[in-house]
Image (tube, rainbow, N blue to C red):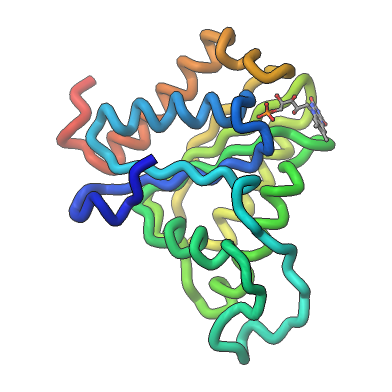
Length: 198
Ligand SMILES: Cc1cc2nc3c(=O)[nH]c(=O)nc-3n(C[C@H](O)[C@H](O)[C@H](O)COP(=O)(O)O)c2cc1C
């Protein structure tokens, strides 16, 4: 994925993916969404959390008094890109009827920004949750609450949930793919209305 910095002036969408399966269902559906956004002329970046070092929050409660988060890992760079983006996609597989551990650890790392009143800039947000059978609503609700807590824009996230189990299942789920494309088109229309005709 091309870095956002290479596309000055174009609206950007960052997708943060909480699945450890690079060729899994969540990652596949995010690729579908990003393909649609690229067609609409947006700059996109996909961040697979499992490919980075993101340590869990240490809960010292000193965020307000510190100039930077003391944890030395990749979270700061990911957060910087995510907070600057015009659009945001958060996507997670359902683990125990909630977001994956990777996604939850990452969500907790937003604490420093929020303590310092740094808020998501995204004007359009899309949420994706995939499960074998149960928990998609709970997972999307967790993502929705995170966005509400980390944004001062009163943005109303769009969401798509679907069922897929083994890696590759989502690629055979036509209605789910269509729903993801629709969501991405709606995001593109919000971010770059002049480029979206129908
Ligand atoms: C640790 C773990 C917990 C899971 N918990 C649930 C669950 O609560 N409900 C469910 O329907 N599927 C559950 N699943 C299945 C995954 O949500 C499903 O396989 C999904 O497609 C994985 O997405 P991915 O291919 O993007 O990794 C679980 C899978 C794992 C590995």
